[in-house]
Length: 107
Image 1: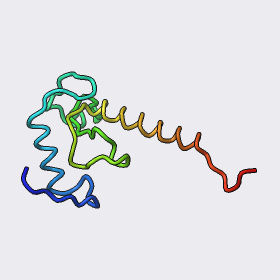
Image 2 (image 1 turned 60 degrees about the vertical axis):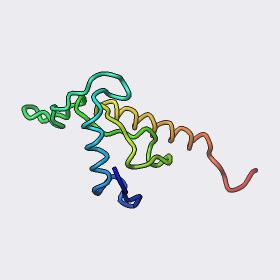
Image 3 (image 1 turned 120 degrees about the vertical axis):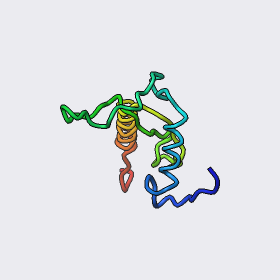
């Protein structure tokens, strides 16, 4: 890919991210989470019902960005698999925060 900007303030915006996403969509065919083939022609929303297609393509990160993941390193996933993984990560993060409750003073 040549030289790419590592401007983390842009995060998931800008040309380097779009290039990484396009390269991923062009080279990969199967979901990294479930292993099933991803239909690249499915639109994000179903035109007849207006509902989101959970089997449509999505760009997923192997390590969550707030856990130290790189914004331009990712892989192909179904939208539903990606959403489920993100929800599991957030729930685990919240669970850890509530169990590690600290007080200002040890009584």
